[in-house]
Image (cartoon, rainbow, N blue to C red; front, side, top):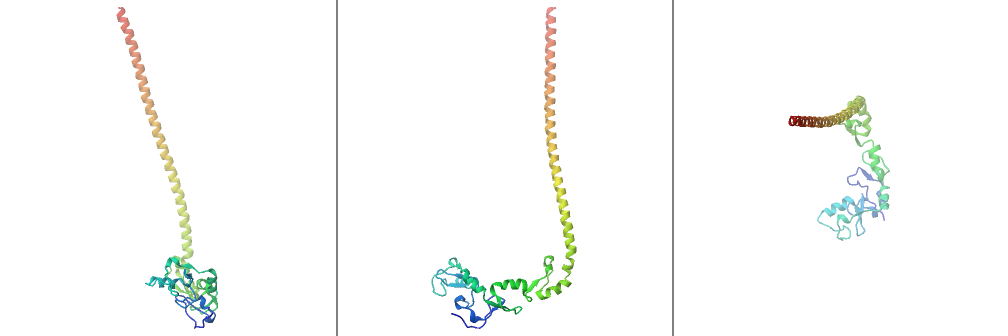
Length: 229
């Protein structure tokens, strides 16, 4: 079954359908009466544009627009690939550049890569160039764009800055390595100092023991000598 309505503008789109007589009404949303856009199906086996049915259910009415069965957003499922492929083959006309016979499924690619009248940013947008205009004006703008003319100098500066950062990181790593080695040496020095201190204490105790031993020994000899007298 087919529709014979006049050519329509798809809501929120920059195209019109070409030859509405070829659009089967079985592939038309009952809410907006236009070919499905991101179609979803209900448990009661009806199909709608996702935006249309979500707007419908956001209102107080929580019923299917077609059969009035209770419905909620969580019950919606994406339509089959067959339906999507069918709709994507419909031919459209770009409202910006007037090009015709564009399959709807390829319209986004047309806008992003081909359409001469679609507004695009300057290639220098990454350099903060504020220009935005139609694609067919882009080359003329680029020929006078001060931001693009500065790009080679900025690229050289970025390269130099990257090399300097790399060198700085290398020096920073060397400093961290030397700092770690210095800390290890400091800890080793402390350990050696502690060992020397313990050795000194041990030697002092040994010397004191020897002195006392000799003292006791001589005192004992002297005592024996005095007794013999």
